[in-house]
Image 1 (cartoon, one colour):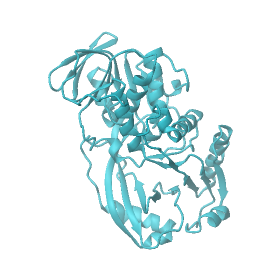
Image 2: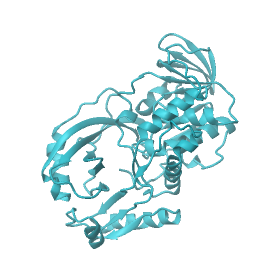
Image 3: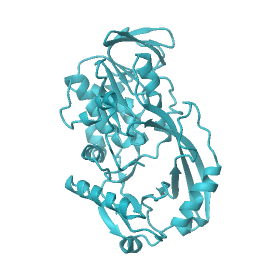
Image 4: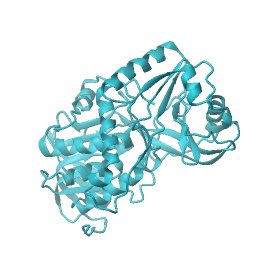
Length: 407
């Protein structure tokens, strides 16, 4: 029988916790579940989330896809673990029959190259991906045309495609169950906001909530998405993460394509894919991609008319006759140093731990990141996948961890 869940209230039950997680969306709830589910962690855990509806979180605006087409071993292996975990999601969450399956719609990513330099990057990436067991294949112009005749391939040299554990998954359902199971395991969630962090020397000591309570904290975990730098700043620290707009449009096509559209990355930077019975297209803004305010979700509808539609209709002529049925703006938690995750303790303030900066990869990487956070908090080290290349040390040294396959 499932444990009875305590109601989510504003005031924490206790005045002191071994771990306080700031941010309870996808990354925070994955971290809370993994930590509370670790048999070697016997501490108390508080999750502070300011928005109980999650309306303005990156979690609520995600396109929820997973891929293994990266250029670094660690990012490939992070996604492979995530795919394996979700394929056995119910079992991994304890076998509760109420937990749903989380299938992957394996239409894959399709990177299209229109010049030899990028084609060579795709070829080199494919060699590494294959070495780690990914199903990525380089397709010639003619092979793409035969498999996906709906593309206009003028100027395209080749494509990189993978139909194994790569495509769309229901990440929001994963999030809801991580959150629920973390609470069943004893993690306490409160609807509140951290407004200050106490620090003595090289240790953080407590958090002050908007409601006035001062809560002692053994460790503080920063899972606050695009607000990561604001949270770090309360402790006198800094992390190069800022909110940046990303546009998404859902549209219907007068003439459906007849088969799934892979998540296609056009050389222009626009991406598009199947989305159930509809299609999805997205892109960054055209104004230099600046940081925006945390509450700035302004949707510039001219992006569709002036940028997205002309590009997707050129690449897929069937999309000349489409109708937009939904649209939104979400925020990437954009890591300005290298667009890769930042996980692990600060190099000087060792009990302040980052799980930030995913730059659009948060959903697909959340499983491995939650497990890694659990290991760092419980054991002081990684015991499965070594995530040290994504640690804070590179931020302090200003040494980017280069990932070539960033969308």
